[in-house]
Amino acid sequence: MLSLVASAYWVYRPLPMISQTVDLSIEPQTTVRGIARASVSAGIEVDPQLLFVFFKLSGQSRALRAGSYEISQGESALDLLRKLSRGEESLKAISLIDGWTFRQFRAALAKAEGLKHDTQDMGDDELMTQLGMPGVAPEGRFFPDSYTYGKGTSELHVMQRAANAMTKQLAAAWGQRQPDIQIKTIDQALILASIIEKETGRESDRTTISRVFHNRLALDMPLQTDPTVIYGMFDHFDGNLRRADLRTDHPWNTYTRKGLPPTPIAMPGRNALKAAVKPAPSNALYFVAKGDGTSHFSATLDEHNAAVNRYQRRITGASSGASSSAGP
Image (cartoon, rainbow, N blue to C red; front, side, top):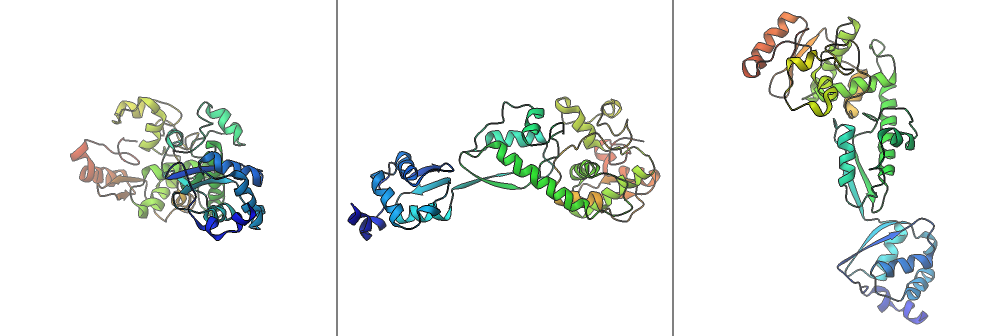
């Protein structure tokens, strides 16, 4: 058998497999013999003892790594060894989009192929406790990015990575804050960033939109931003924001309540985080969407109403407000 292992013919010839591809999952702390057996159990049709001896004689047995691997038809024992020793896992990815809510994040996790769906029965409180943030509302606490994972990876593991990334990105942004901003805590920065994320149609407008909100906070004016109202309506929002909705009080209604809402309303990206703490110079107190992805900014209500008439009211019937659709 040792002569066979040493044989270049055996080492380089394609491994016989039960299908075109084989998914091989190696758990941490698996022995070399266990890796050989797992390879055979996954669908590689060789003697596990032969594979074990090859691994041992290769000099790479201590380098074999746990993970999820995809072995394709035509690959050899040497190819298998190289994948296992280099940790060339078969990875998938899940992308979290800037502006997504926590509910959208969980829905994406539930649909993600290959993940171990171990959080679907957890409530928000239990989940945040598992992530080391007991008592913290989950909204906005996960950084939108692409996260790779191997087959069988826990949802909780992906969520932990996203939570750690947001903690890091938020701290980095907070460290760059301007001295004249109206927010006093890092959590307030996260809340404001989430509003900016939902209000922004054009990257170049982010910092000026941020300044509008800072100016309003400085004057003790309500923020009057539609996305917060929509968020607080939850399942009752049908896609049409009405005047009655703007007058219906709830914790996230920034028309009926001054200051920031109690929690973020979405997952802000890196640029929204920076904009929240580094607003552009401006005396604007209002802005309205122009219909091309940009916003028109105004310092007075009269100027804002004129802009609303120009850009929105003739089309949608909207009236004046801090961001688009209701009067102060």
